[in-house]
Image: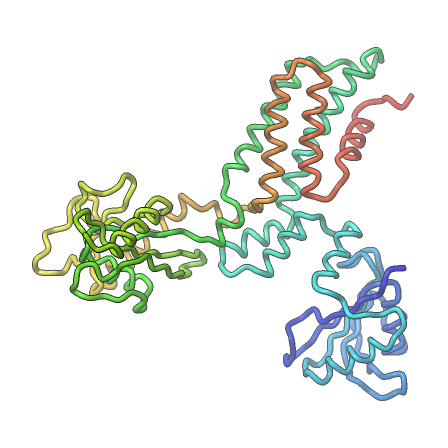
Amino acid sequence: MTDTIYALSSGRPPAAIAVLRISGPDAIPAGRRLAGDLPPPRTAALRTLRTAAGEPLDRALFLVFPGPKTATGEDLVELHLHGGRAVVAAVEAELATLPGLRAAIAGEFTRRALEHGRIDLAEAQGLADLLAAETETERRAAFAAAEGEISRQVAAWLSRIAHLSALVEASLDYSDEDDVGAAPLVAIHDDTADLATTIAAVLARPTVERLREGITVVFAGPPNAGKSSLFNALLARDAAIVTDQAGTTRDVLEASVQRDGTNFVLIDTAGLRADTEDAIERIGIARAGNAIARADILLWLGEAADAPEGATIVHARSDASDRATAPAGAHAASVNDQASIQALWNHLHQRATTIMPPVSTALLHQQQRERVAVAHAALTHATVESDLLLVAEQLRTARTHLASLLGVDATEVMLDALFARFCVGK
């Protein structure tokens, strides 16, 4: 028999209110044991909670949610307690004395929701991401996943594959039946190719991990070009040592900053030159080259003619008396001119929008992406198979990997579509 579990589902005390949940077959009896007469289902009512000896624990709001239409799919009781540590501890201690009840382990409420079909795997992953989100872009992507955007997308793909599988199965097994005709292979190929193209567009998006990593902005150029000063100015703090001596920066220096819901990773690098005999500086220059190679956005503070392809040319120290006018297309910037720093940030945000997906888009995790990629490859192979048996096998592979994202049985998906669309049960 399934245990009945309890846990605090709000923030740790002290707080104004502490919400404690009890879920499982003994949840309602446990609530009755604490509060006596229970309110009607889904109706909040004040109750005095008492120990087995009749001692009062707290006067709290009490709600009863009979399963299966609850957050966990089981009978559920919510206690809205006063949020002091002693109150919560006393109620939890009393619950621990009741037979069949135990404290929940991490994630157990959500796992029960998954096991009872209240959410699927993709929604559970989205909920975990929502709890871990640190930026606005992460929050929006996680919320979309938790609300079922990925699930609906995958379910739509599964429905199309199930239909294609049903056509293939009908062509193979029921072609002699009057009401189940054999589908032309070319039509199956065309529909499969169209679905593969749709999935390829989703695979082209960054993964959730990409949101967490943020936009990598690398400062590069010759020694004494003003890289470290500009690095500090964009961070609004002194993270890098700045001196008039060339070659002060010997290694890469990373710092993260969140701006308008997006995480940026700024990387200061050693000045690039070919004539150094300093072994340490040569290592720093090599590391600078590696940072440049992996940059999402490269800010080049040297001569425009020397800039790597795709770099943003920054005319640093633009207010210095010995500096020429900024060349066409370059961003004039000075640590003494906050407007120029803001303009550079505006440019970085504009570039970021071309790198990151729309914030309302639910993104796949790397592990989810790998499964979708296998499904896409199978669909692609199916478009060139001339044997219907091999087409059916590729479609089965695609179904299995996509269904695993939701935690559903791929065979049941196919059978549901088959029997819904064709009158084969004669």
